[in-house]
Amino acid sequence: MRQQTRRQKARHGGAETRRPEPLPLPPQSLMRQRGFTLIEMMVSLGIGALIIGATMGLISECLRYRVNLKEKSYIQPILESAAQVILADPVKAMDGFVSLGELEGSPEVGVYLLPVQLEQESVGGGQSGRLYRVMLYYRSASMDFSIIIPNKDPMR
View 1 (cartoon, one colour):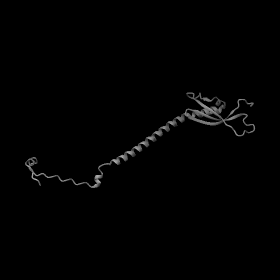
View 2 (spheres, rainbow, N blue to C red):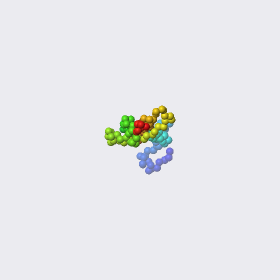
View 3 (cartoon, rainbow, N blue to C red):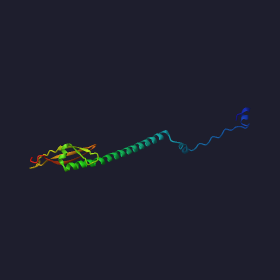
View 4 (tube, rainbow, N blue to C red):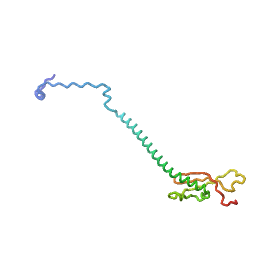
């Protein structure tokens, strides 16, 4: 070993200094447990983002379905009521709309009539009325059915 100078001896109390022994290296399995690599972090972040995105999409669809169902449950009875009014008095369908004054807000349901052309008319057929396809419209919903509307002139 090298001789120490007086200064070094005074600083260290005159004793010879030894280098500390290096710590033994941990086994390879312990070195691997220190943390995650950048690639592992990127893959886990990507998978997490996909899971969160899919969950948010599912929640969004559920909320949209709930709103549509609520709207349909409000609109469908109005369309059915308008159909009952037309079935009770088919001539009301000729006005182009049906007003439901009995219901709150007196909703008006649009009526579109489409005459049905028959290939062959039976003997005596068509004298009392004509076959129509009735389409009812209210807000974003529609309903259709067929009905025979009597002729205005019974002698015809």
